[in-house]
Image (cartoon, rainbow, N blue to C red; front, top):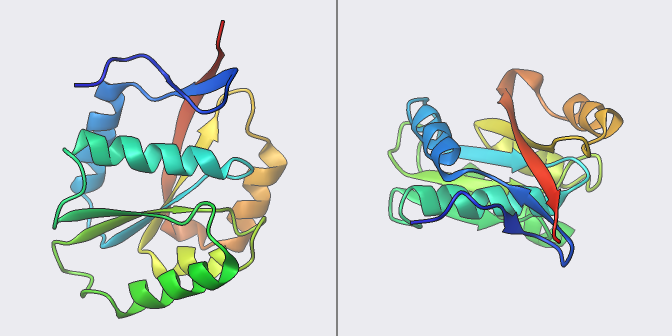
Length: 159
């Protein structure tokens, strides 16, 4: 079981997701109807990747029912391939679910199609560091009706 300590992203800075909060988030997400969920972190794609990994950990790791795809650092060609695969995937009423860490469409235009291939999106923001202008640019490029909300993580400096 994970401690509630934040996990390091860089050599001197990190981001914290508390285990209990992640479990509650997962149970809330699991109660909704979706097949693919985009995790989008404007300006900080590594945050989407980190949340993806932590959510998979919270549900006991990848399984047949829940899979993760980390496209946060993918090339445009790879993002297009993932988008096509999601469009051809299991029907929306399937019990199989896919969490997808996605770069912001404001930073990589191909990501817009990947977010569109998902049923919903969840923004991943960093307290005191995510810039409103980046969030607004991202929201302008995706269907706001599909955005479930935002996860707000706190950052810390390693001592």
